[in-house]
View 1 (cartoon, rainbow, N blue to C red):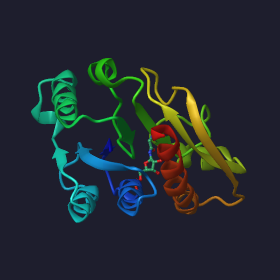
View 2: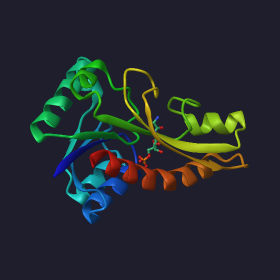
View 3: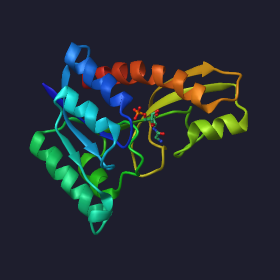
Length: 186
Ligand code: GAR
């Protein structure tokens, strides 16, 4: 059975959607590792609930990004990870991880890339006044939110409440991420 690692920094609703789909057999794989860079993040409770082992670290306790990325890659090698899914991991993947896992890392982003890259995509899109929002799943390379696009889904929204856009978008994310992971693993 294929093994997935999920990287997350926050709440982990996407983590839960993927872990639940694996548990239900809607994804023919197992979530074998959660990587979390924020001690105390809510995603850790979700991992515990699903019995998924977590590697949680504090980036500041490492001398460099290369050092913690080497440790992450070593742990993924030991488990035989096939696919890495970034799910609200608010950190740029560096050369150490890309050298060892490039071509096997995907990310979900709450905007229609290449528009609104970065950490505040929804807020930026609302401030810009767009009328069509969306979700993008893409391969991760050395560019910020710039790797080849795998899947996208758009939705119309005429209001100006970022929280509402997040709510609508996350429902789409949970379904689209599961569908996309399933296709990639087949
Ligand atoms: C998701 O909406 C994801 O698109 C976004 O973080 C959220 C994490 O939610 N990612 C980015 O903004 C990456 N630039 P979750 O913790 O509930 O899964």
